[in-house]
Structure formats: structure tokens, C-alpha cells
Image 1 (cartoon, one colour):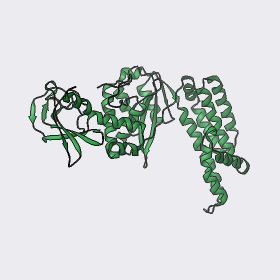
Image 2: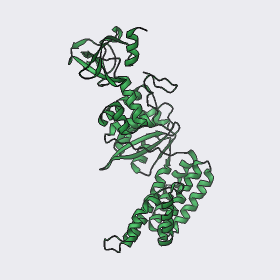
Image 3: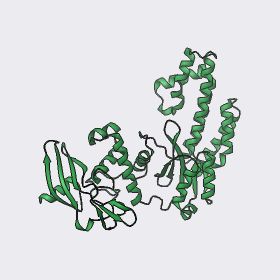
Image 4: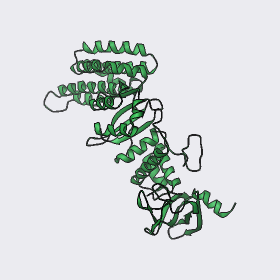
Length: 413
């Protein structure tokens, strides 16, 4: 095998001429001088079309490649600009890296793969990059994948949700495909304007093909769906319905906690125990630790009202567990029995909740009948674009394979 072919494989580059390779002892790095092949030269870095020469740009520049053993590898090349008819003066396209990237395709893809599957500290340590850099790479790889893959083809049943990603009421609006289970769109904000952006991008023809939409009870979502998807039936997302019950339960617990403090604002043994009980109250029964089960038993004896509220929350969760296991008729009957139970429970938070659920009962039945439940996600990024990128890679089926690996689900460049 010739040296050039070996270096092509080691550096993970294609359609590239390797002019020279040098080991720099001072920095303990390998630097390869490269250039695009003749057919790939003088193309716009944004659209890839041929364009006339403009200037030398900022001269030679470097791109970080995957490490070669324990040493860092860099690619070095001229980076002139062409005058693209559409984008104006733009740095030329290079086959080894994405536009405006400081890393090669292989480096970007490996960082993105690791970000989906490993911890924050592992990605930073293994790839020797800052977390901010990881976020920028994730957003770049996801944007590239979205252009090459049409996740909106044959879209029929969707879920619309809002998630908080940062303190200070920072939210994303996300859309999932119920049939594939993929996250297909996300954007900062949670209002009509944000959601209209999705339906505008989807187009009127595809909007008309949407048959089912699940969401929480937010009116801004319902209004936009009615406006843009006239043929769709709207279901209430089971996750949010159970979340309503959890919020009602927490209100009952807080009322009991305040009563235990005696209105003096001072902690007592009872109030401290109630404060710590919220973890046992929130958790599913099958996931309780021995200590948390003991806490529930204590609540049953000392605060029966709180324990009854917990039982109501669990009763509502059972409704959707039945639906998830295919017992849809039983789930609807269980929901009706739960409404009657909550109506008579004499716990104001749950009496109010049953009114809310009764108002959304038809939408809940739709979700039960058609298996509609939205996905949830949470990742350690403060930047919404990095968060959206990681969500699309992890939940949208867009994660690239590790460099040098090929499998049937790989996205090819």
C-alpha cells in the first residue's frame, strides 16, 4: 500500500491530495499539508457550486483531525475565497471539513457520537476539547444531517411539547413523529409565532396530511393546530395529564407542610419529614426504595389526606398504563371511575383537576385510542442550538456512525 493511501486512511479524508506530512516535535503534533482534488477546487463553501476566484482570504489555515495514537493531527491548506453568485465572497469548500468548522468531518462525527452516548467529562477528556466546542460541533453535525435527510416525509401523527432548558423560563418548542418515535423539529420559544414557524416550514400540503396531534392543554398550541392542520384530531398528551396530577399532589403536600409548621414559619419534625416525603410521592411504586416505601407507610398513618392524594395520582397513572398495554376500553372505563372518585374526594386540588380532565376528556380518549404520547428530553446545554442539535442526534435518528465504521443506518455524505 502506497504512503499516500495510508495517510488518507489514517487522516480519514477523501477527495483530497496529501502534499506532505510533518511531525512537529515542539508541539508533539502531526501536520499534513493538503488540498482539494482538481474537480473539487474553487467551489463555494456554502452551496458547493463553482464560482470565480475572489481573493486569498486569510491565507493558510488548519483543521483538527482525529488523534493518531497519542499525538494530535492537523490538516493545513490554503483557504482562498470565491465570489459566489448567491452567497458573495465565501471561503472555498474543502472535502475534509464542514463550512466554518475548525475540525475535520471525522473529528466532528466522533464528537457528536460520543456526546449522544457518553458523559460530558468523557467527551471533553477523550477528545481534548471544551464543552462549548462540543456544543458547537453537535449543532453543526445536526444541521448538516437535517439537510440530507427528509424526516418530514409521510408525516401523519405528531406530538407538540414545550420543555424548559434553563432557569429564567427559557423554553423550547419541540415536535415529535409518533409513528417513527423521532424528534423532528425544535426551536427556542413557546408561543404561537414559534409554532407557526414549524408549520410554515412543513408547507400547506403536508400540513393538510396531518391526521393526529397530541399536546398539553395549552391554548396557544390548540389555536395554531386548528389554524394550520384543519384535518387533524387533537389529543391530550398522557405525560402532561399525569404531570397535572403530580402538581395537584404536591399542592396537597405543601398545604400539609405549612399546617405542620403551625403558621409560625418554623420547621418542626413533622414539617421536615413532609418536605422529604416528596421524593417518595413523585416516584412510581415499582421504583420505590425500601426507605421511600416506609415513608409512604408513615404518611398513610400520620397524613391520610396526603396519602389519598398520592393514591389519586397513581390511579390516574394506571389509566395510561392500561392504554399503553393495549387495554384501551378498560383505560377509558378506569378514567371515568377516576373522575367520579376525584369529584368526591374532598381534596380541592383534585376536585379542580377532575374538572380540568373532564374538559379534556375527549382529547384524552383520542390519545388512548391512537397511542399518542410525547417524548421528553433534557441535556446539559445552556445554548438552545446545541441542545436542539443533541436532541436531533439522540432522538431524531441523525447521529452519525463512528468514523471508519459502516452500518445499515449510517448517514452517508
